[in-house]
Image (cartoon, rainbow, N blue to C red; front, side, top):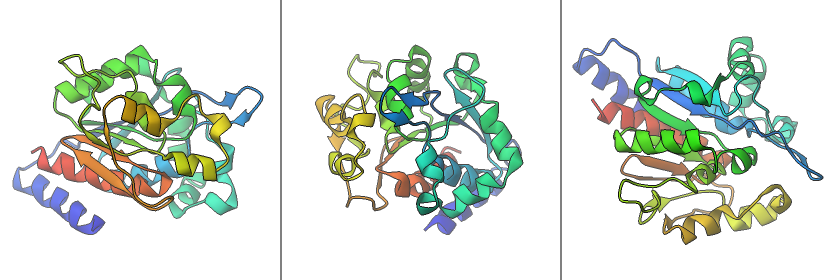
Length: 248
C-alpha cells in the first residue's frame, strides 16, 4: 500500500512540474515528567516512522515544540522491546537527533510556511498541548486553509480545545481515532494521563473509531487524519503523503 501512495505522490509532482518541496511541520511535546509517576515525552516510533517516510520522498520536515530546544523522548520507547527499525535508525542518525535537540519554538511558527501539520504522540502531548493557545490556533488555521492535520496515538489530545469556524469542536461529527481506554489499561499507564483520550473525543462529539488493540488503525475525515496507537504511525504518514499529492 505505501508504495502505491509514494508512486502517486511522485507522479503527481511530475505531472504538475512541481519543483518546490512540500513542507510538513511536526509538533512535539516539551513535557517530560508526570510528578510522582515517571518520565514521559514523545513516543519515539511515532516521530521516526513518519519522519523517514516523508523525508524519503523529498518532503522537508521542521520540528517545533512549545518551549523550543531539546524535546523529551519517553525513555520506555527506547527500550529494546519497543525499538522499531525507524527508531533504531534515528538513534544512529546524528542529523535527525540534532533536529530534535533544537526544535523551534511553537510561537515562531507561521502556518503559511507549511503544507501540513503532524503531531506524534506519547503521554507528553496530553499535558502541554491541549491548552496551548499557539497549538490550538495553528490547528484551526491549517483546518481553515484546507491543509492536512494529522495526529497519532495520544496526540489527538491536542484537539481537545480546537474549534471549527462555527464554534463547534473541530472533531464534532468527524471520524477520529486515538489511543483506546483498553490499550491504556493494558499498558498500565493510566496514571500518566490527565484524562481519558477516548472519552474526551466522544464527549466532544467525535465519531470515535478503533481497531484491535495494538494493531495499525487510522482514519481520515476530509483532511483530518488520526491514528490509534504507535503501530498506526506508518498508516498516518501514508495518508499525509496521499493528501499532499491530492492537493495539487
